[in-house]
Image 1 (tube, protein in one colour):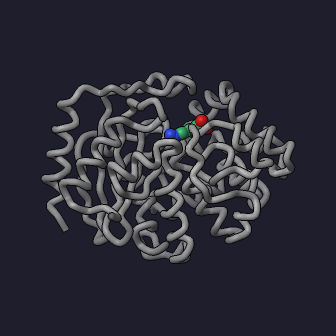
Image 2 (cartoon, rainbow, N blue to C red):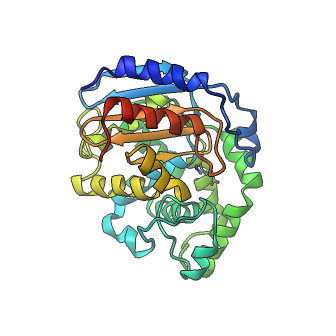
Length: 304
Ligand code: DON
């Protein structure tokens, strides 16, 4: 393994020295208050060595990163049946666009865009007695951290302003691809997105995607085949209309969120989380992308 300690410190300095061209997300009012200067990196390798720099222990809103976790839980519960209601193709569109959904008769392109994640939320609402509690429990179990929690202010803030998601859920309902009540499914969706976690907690949670489905305590949560599929989806769909750019510059499967977090991983080697709230026009952290590009370049570790 390369000297991750030196690499993370070098990359952190390099990126801090550049002006941040990103902007904090404002369409969820509660996220608009975040300090754009926050910046942290955490890396966890397969042998459980940890390296970090900056605000790596501070919690932030993981937003769309949660879509990987709800997908994992849905696959864990109903396996391949998930794909009866969703496709696995990159959309090439922004995360909240709806035009393809209408053209393709209510079948979302993939589970990582908003419409797809709302179908996954619907599956969890159908399968679980108390979806919010049981999903939180699932995340606490795979991370081994019982302090992980929702941020109700963020959830309620999005509930008041998430008009595109109301449109997506209603469109899905009109195509009979939403089985439960629109408001009930969205309530769960807004909560999953409001999960508050640090870079360090994200690495603990995503360890199972580098460890063939086993969490840090070596407990099995996903099959090897399910992990292969979820990692493939992160590579092709994890950054929406910037998935190609991310593969081109970074070369790792990963997932971003409008809270400014990005998690990326190299199976059997390491997972890394970065947090910097300034976003580019496509909703991905500008500094996060820069950090990961330099990390894979300096370490000479990517899937390519
Ligand atoms: O549904 C939304 O718009 C947000 N809760 C999540 C979007 C998001 O994080 C997109 N990621 N880059």
